[in-house]
Image (cartoon, rainbow over all chains, first blue to last red; front, side, top):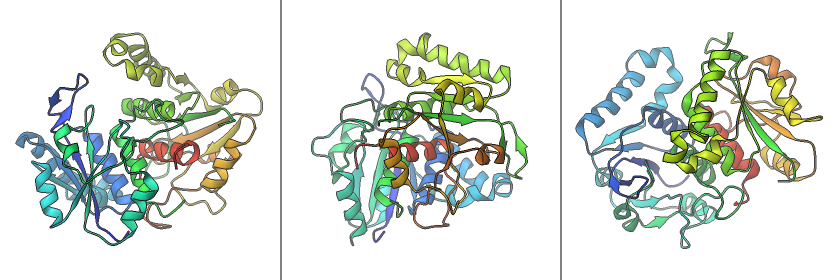
Length: 186
Length: 186
């Protein structure tokens, strides 16, 4: 890719299943799975966004274990993936780290009529441009405040047909989106 | 798709990280994630293959909880996905349930020079033919005994370049492979 592409996994603001805005807890396997997918597809960083210091400390301990602790010596393949983790309190921190002009691209399981389709999004990433932050929500999806300030909303993933069942885990959705946008193999 | 496509998640025989042949334990999140991806992409069944009765009973309890227990009333969206789970002791049982002529297609993170590429595999699934069982290994990948008896070995997933980092979780790999083979959206 010509542009720097990073991802962010957001724990606040996200929806719960009644669509209230909540803070979700960090899931250990999200960090591993999405870091491994991020590294496979050449992303520069995986920002873990959590407003609660104790939750950030937990994520930092996971990072430490797999980059410098006993996890790193036991399963060295995991190290370069987990090393992509950057744990921050807000999405603004992640955007700021990417530098001036960074674009926020959000993902959603809900159909957005105006969503950018994947072939177009792929072409935009292959062209020159500022860094892009692909933003994923935990729980029942990103809060409206995040979606509204995004420069791009990606189309939803449909499997077998438009409007069909789409309740992918965030781990699966991130893997599919990285593959659609960044894979060199077709 | 014209053909019936199912998936199997194998816990024996699989490799550990020293490439010894072992039996892996069931990971709860594998069942959820791969069932959700399977249902999104229209697969007919997700076979959970485990030789140990106590492990199969655990998987059956997960299925029960999310299809008829309190999980089903709390998160109804999960029910049709988890209902795809079929828990069997051996891969032969899964093949037998798909009926005469069912084809075993294996997946692997290791580059197979002879692996069927994804566009060709996609075309084969779109044509008429017997049922196909897509087989995924846990741990460090499927045992040789499974790979050797497969009719098709799919190409490995490469992210940014051939021979690059590829240490996807089985949850992520299954999602990407379903998307590449079965998605109607391109």
